[in-house]
Figure 1 (cartoon, rainbow, N blue to C red):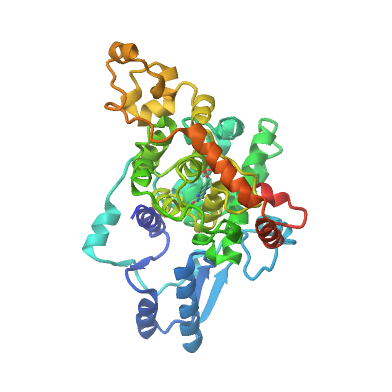
Figure 2 (figure 1 turned 180 degrees about the vertical axis):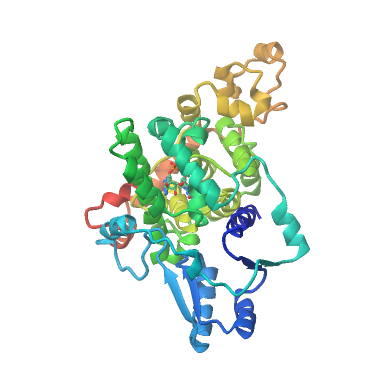
Length: 436
Ligand SMILES: Cc1cc2nc3c(=O)[nH]c(=O)nc-3n(C[C@H](O)[C@H](O)[C@H](O)COP(=O)(O)OP(=O)(O)OC[C@H]3O[C@@H](n4cnc5c(N)ncnc54)[C@H](O)[C@@H]3O)c2cc1C
């Protein structure tokens, strides 16, 4: 519903400019009815890189359109290309696409027969109209405002703050949901960045880090475009069979933000409410789930897909697998939740906001509440295990276990062989994109 609401806001936004019709139900049935009514000649859409079920839907629709002599014109979305076998020319293609002219279609050329018409149930309408002040609002207007604000006043401090849980919420562009749902394109954003790059006041390093990430956006979506099963299969099959069983109790603690690790708990509570975490926190909570708690990545990825307002399947599942260590080709990163907390949130600003029950403690104890002594408990009127949960695991020993288990697999011939296959398909011959 979080995503539908964002799309609905975006549709309402463009409904002032264009005529918008919204239908609820099976797309095949809806198109059949529309065709009976309007005798459709052309269907225009972007090329969607979705999941197995949207892929199946598209195949069925393609057949229907063909049978009805309807021409379906799909345009390239954000520099992701259909039908590639490998990545050798991908980067060049992406760059050419980013630099190509953006053509504005005159409104007079768009003649819709339908009028604004939201054919949806009252229940859905009520849900869609619910406002959530903590989340970003959807729409083209907001997307353009976000990029304007970012380039006018934030970009110079962007890279310095990108990994800080609290500050990143302000200094990062926060464009991801607008890009994911098509309120703005990476090409529009890329060209705006390019137009200001030579200004003397712009911090070029910071700006370039930002535009590199626009390329990563398409790089990851391209992976799903070329291999749809990464939604549920380990990219590297040598890692099959590890972490098969979900421990309901551990998973619940992670999901609800009650693991006893303050940074993890703050992040999980924050994403539930606000729909956003910066990259480092996303990586840290996935690392905690899959390495420290040794849980399968799939249930975690489905849960966070629902929570992230910017849910973009191609980025989401590729990143999840990278952080879970199931690609076999990326550096194995097991983020230490205490070190991350001390390094990236030294004053515990982020933790205090999302885990307020720890606020009365001094900062050192906020990061590691298990160090509290009985005397300090009395002094701060805080009962460890009552006011805040005891930690459910020991992060140091669990990280050691996970590292040993994963390295053992990573070193096998099977993993190396699979790794070569993955590299030849998803990484260009110079291997540079591997970093993303
Ligand atoms: C486990 C995990 C899941 C993720 N799931 C998603 C997801 O569903 N949707 C999503 O858009 N991003 C996802 N990301 C990538 C990244 O965390 C977000 O794109 C970023 O935090 C969005 O914030 P921003 O718009 O302020 O980014 P900025 O730092 O301002 O970057 C600008 C744009 O570049 C792109 N971008 C930035 N970082 C990355 C990255 N590491 N990989 C790919 N593209 C990037 C995004 O489109 C982003 O909007 C995920 C990362 C991890 C570790």
